[in-house]
Length: 520
Image (cartoon, rainbow, N blue to C red; front, side, top):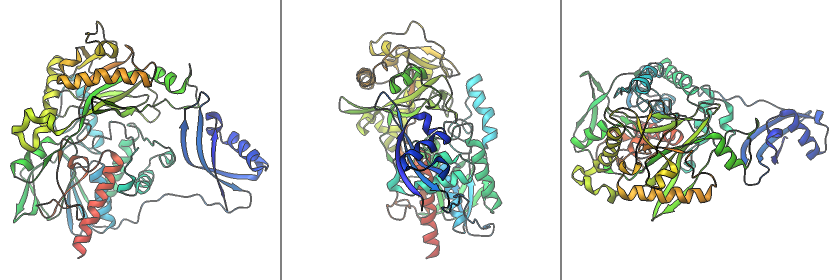
């Protein structure tokens, strides 16, 4: 039987198989030649001391012990071309993993996606960055794979109570992701790697008899006697089915407006909002690793900060080591920021959303919009940023210390945000109470991370799409909408997930609930 050990070793030993075997041979008091295989099961960084260590959980096989490499394979997906159909609206992680689960359960998914496939999206992303032109159906949020495809693919989740995280990670590995995502404490695929994985998932759905329809936007849901009958698309086409998984993501405002217009129950939901802060990665490395030079054996350092400021949570969100800031507007006349990293996280800058918890009472000025009040609040800030940025995709920006001192920055260095920046006093973007919390919060952040509060850091505003401003209520057991039979609100857009993994889990669960109903 292999031995499992918990180790704490230097980054150099952790990254070199030969050195790791030498280390283990001394621990086990055997020759290094006696160690046949060392399998790393878990890996994380401990940077609490000046001498940084890697925490490893390893499985060790000595000579003579039977060893069989664990090969991760896809489930035995059957052909479902003639099976009962289920409509899945949205080809993000919730929709794609719902479709795969439906196939596994013997049902035929018809996936409709308003945007283009992963390759076609690239031209539209280029148009945002270069020409400041926003395609409302194809952008960083909409299109095959959803927001995660071209904005990072971080897989860290706290949603283990919601379902089987390992199953989702293993499916991603089976579709081509690195096996490291099963090992690392904060797994990450990278924007350069995700498109091929997403494309392979789509091809598997089609190969098994499912359908995937791009540039097909939902414009109406057909309902009779409070039961789903099918949908209508922007071309006037009708797709009939009495089971509908609605997985449209947190930015599908037209879907929220459609539900509200049809008097389908939805609720305003609190979310978080703030700025995206960019530092030199070398500065974050020096703070987190307490060193002048990171070295080749350590990854670019992340950070995570949480503070209570004036009774509100202010925290880092979607932190991207070695990454860039992207323009994530979904309509003309608005500016939105997000961040992403390539798989190697090898860019010169680090960025993170720094956001503040909002409360439903903050939306009172927009009360006339009912359940859409939070969405309108969000929209108003994005539109204000667009005007302040010069009515282009240039983003309002300010040096961090200048912001805390209410001082317009005399200059803004070039940042990773390609469309460019406009020097603005950031307090103009946000309501007064939010600006004040941000100012005080950055001062507190600087006390926790010495060197973080610096004018080398550039703030970009706003970071506003942290989660959905709307929840679509569903039954906690059946996952069906509280009033409409056959409607299954799903994923981030419905208010039941907060990232790739939790959305994928939620998609699978909706598919399982549908299968249970159809079998009874």
